Image (cartoon, rainbow, N blue to C red; front, side, top):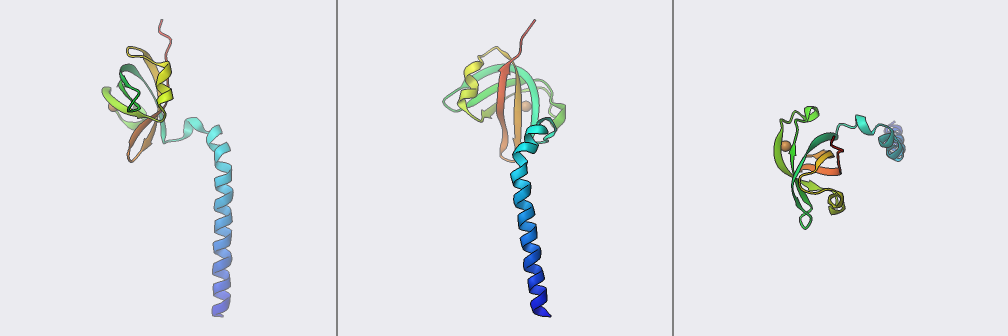
Length: 116
Ligand SMILES: [Cu+2]
């Protein structure tokens, strides 16, 4: 009887593991399709106040970001890659993507917005 329970437990664990693997393999496609719905990424608009390519940081005077309950403010952000800062300069109005994490927010995309 005990042996049967153990066999059952192992089988259940194997099924759970293989389900997890399938879920992970599917994830890249899923996140690609549902990019806008991903709660970890939020969009913002602001003005570039300072750029520090050496530190990989950008200071943004951003508008309120309702998705995460932020009021408008000026603050520094880490960027996912210093390359992201090549296409923006101080004074640019920009649209950016923030990835939310417990360690802080990281800019994962940033581009100038056409001003009219
Ligand atoms: Cu802020």
